[in-house]
Image (cartoon, rainbow over all chains, first blue to last red; front, side):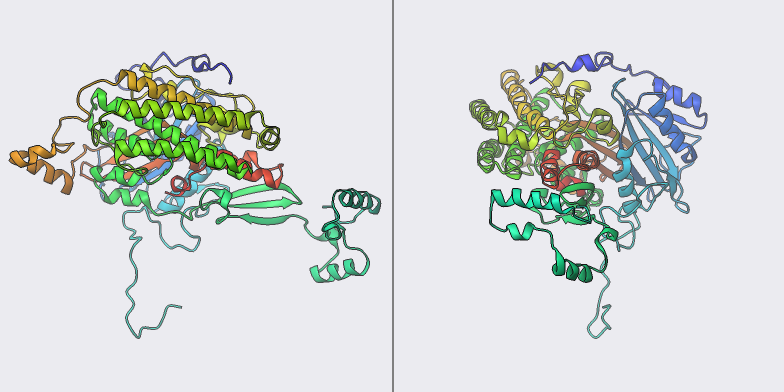
Length: 190
Length: 437
């Protein structure tokens, strides 16, 4: 059992990021400076940046290479079909889907959340598996459950649902428990 | 498995095998002459042209896959070239279910995801709800939560010790591990009323206060678990057979672990001391003294050792919880969030209305979104919660550590022996309920 001293490896451990006004988060500020289309928003003390989905890959690369965000801890999506008029920063156009990625920097001990609006008629966004191989599974999951395609993903197949499943269960207009009613005497589907 | 056999080598090999045993030795001899020709005809071609690798499916019913994990492995003889986990066999749509349940009912749902550490799931969900509500649970609730989560960490790691031992052939370890885990679950039962899937941590606090005499029971358990861990240590850590099976097997380094999204004991086994309890403290982890266990080699043995000693760190935290448990309320006295005491319902109309509204409609949560992460026994468990202002979440997403940790198999399994794959899967400690949700 080695002598454990977590603080030695986390220089920022004691220096908690100060909750400061917009765009107080230094990473978010740097990101907004580099990508002027990005919009900073704070959500319950957590830095959130709304970005253009075209810049998705570039922003992940910026966070990884310039800002020491060593892990993309989570990629998921939200279907806002039933809440189209939600509170978003002014310059962000609300679309049906939101793709959400949470990044974690171990060296700087901070997190940032990046959100991109993805329209229903063209649900595609760039894959960041080449930068963060660990998002392979979550991107497949998001594809499987929301039908959002991640361009250049190495293995974009269904992961949780069966391969022959029709539909994407976490979409609000999908009814996963719906079973077609069969009547006596109907020709069997098989 | 080279196609054309060099006879002299084969002879040497056959003789060596026959010297060890005469049983079944003839099956180990490569086919020669007519038999070989027949084999060639049946398999449709000369050996060298046949792709020598074999795809083997391990699972989803294999006992060492801890549930219903299926691993497709490409084998060259006994060596694994590639391994691909295939999941989804336990997918029950819990995130979809979560959108249909109110926030009051939500913890009943999430507790069933990681069924080996249900309290971590409840905690992360409740912390996310409380963040959206801007609600601070009382101090005693915080400490009760910490006590329960650490007890749960002990039981989860004890389960790992048991199943890891069983997977690697140390079957007596299985019985010892279950023995201490049973004691822990029994204590959790006296506190929460259930052995698993407690639904005890709820938005606003916990469901009930600690029972009378809990200090005695908890301290007694601490002694028993410490004694048990000492026994495992004696049984396994210096055991040459155990070391042979685990040391240097399934090695992963820090860069790989970070890139593949691994957290928890897998990341710490690579010499990277990252524990959210220390790095981004939540609950009252700031006020207790404990160490982050980490090792440098990143192999199966290190992951075993980390989990073993983390049990002792949890015991340390639990003892401090007993010592410092503050008084006061075990949940917020906000009738819009927590139900009134049972006795008040008989006396007060308002209490009855609050109770009724809370358990039929639930409470409304202001619109917003948040991501909360805590350290579960398996790593970072996160909850991404989106509310549209109603009593049910728009989106409830749980970032299950096992789901991500499973990917680190890509770095551990290839190049190793087939038998080591069992050890590696076991050392990842995946809980399929959380992987598939």
